[in-house]
Image 1: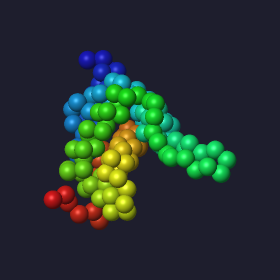
Image 2 (image 1 turned 30 degrees about the vertical axis):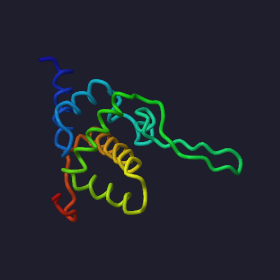
Image 3 (image 1 turned 45 degrees about the horizontal axis):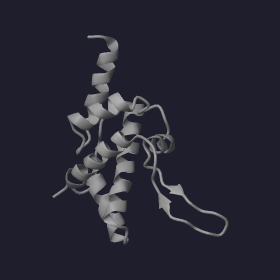
Image 4 (image 1 turned 135 degrees about the vertical axis):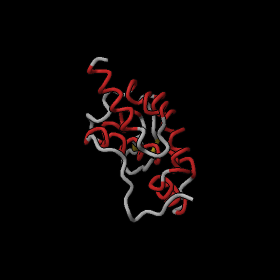
Length: 140
């Protein structure tokens, strides 16, 4: 096995430590998003297309929306966010907090996609596996 393959496998296994991220998502991220771990949270969010973009002009305050980026990565992370809402207490708490504040469920789910991407990017950059904070309740 070459060294590049070994590094690839290490990244895949590192990403799989996150509840809600399995073999398909981690493999797709490593193969289709080689920049993972090399960019800032803002840069990686814009690259994938999950960073909200303002549509303001003068005194007009337009809507914030996401567009562009890598659609396949965005789609696979969306499905990962759906699974993570059930199995990952950090994402579940974040989603419920947004919905509780009156945000639409679709908007909250899109915010979860961005949060997962930022978490995975930081994990790869720091080469740290998933660690759950002690003060969070387990998912029911």
